[in-house]
Length: 430
Image (cartoon, rainbow, N blue to C red):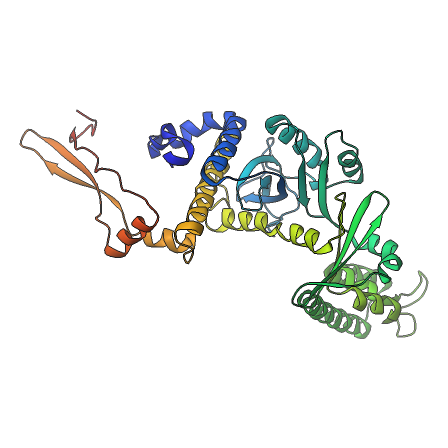
């Protein structure tokens, strides 16, 4: 850790770590600047392309009266728990540049404008490209990015409604193969470039999901036809079925009885909406990207957008490998410190990944950590004749395969710590 974050943090004792981090979190911006410089020094990293996304992490506790812990849209499928939202910026190589902890009910669309200002203030005005999911930017913010004095480029997913508007313009454009079973085409429209991509793998997945949901919905509607229900009961059950079916519900035309009609097979029946079904089949596996980058190469923009998986991988590692969820702390400062520790751990994990790329490309970070985890630090206590104890802190001698791994990564173990003499009761250094 000392090589990446400096010697001071490396000397912090574990029992004082949270106390130190309570103070360090007040200096996050300075830490982000420092990290950016370290990424450049260690790996010649560049920050022209920034990947931005948000996630949430939950708390298994009673809802507090105030603070950032609130109910909101849970990416962890724990809507029963309060949460905080975490926004993260990483580079395509996975180097994290900044993060922010927000209220648990924060809407994604309200976060981008503030982050644009933060990055510009911290790293200066520069020609950057922001890559995001479609739910993050608003039309207002995208217009500001297009009209900025210093070019601020973006590449973002676009909702299906815009594809409906541009469908005729795409019909005359040829498809270009960018990968096996993946094709793209491009058009210029007003001030933006649009890329339409279609994937056979994605199409098969969406087709399977649609069929499964449609079959389940039809089965449920047939069950309702056999039940003896009042109109109000039927509408209530249809509402639940609609919520579960999602967009698939629109593929059926459902006739329900009017207010004065009983529920019978004549007043309650359904049929496929074949026009919408054909449209859904035609668009399965397709998605639309939009950007203010002028380009005649749809493959380049598609590959650029594909790098967004790096920030998704960062969230996966933060939640699974680095245990950012759930959070059990109650104090706001400790919550911030918990997330800060996870962020620093992710910085170290990325550093290890980058070293492995050049020094041991056949190994993954997880394999290396599992291998080195067998090396442990133990305390050997030797009592003396004057009722004191000599404490020898020693790490276990590495095995041959561990020595080989350390040598390959050009890592050298530090000298064994010097002995300490303590009393039996106080356990303090003499």
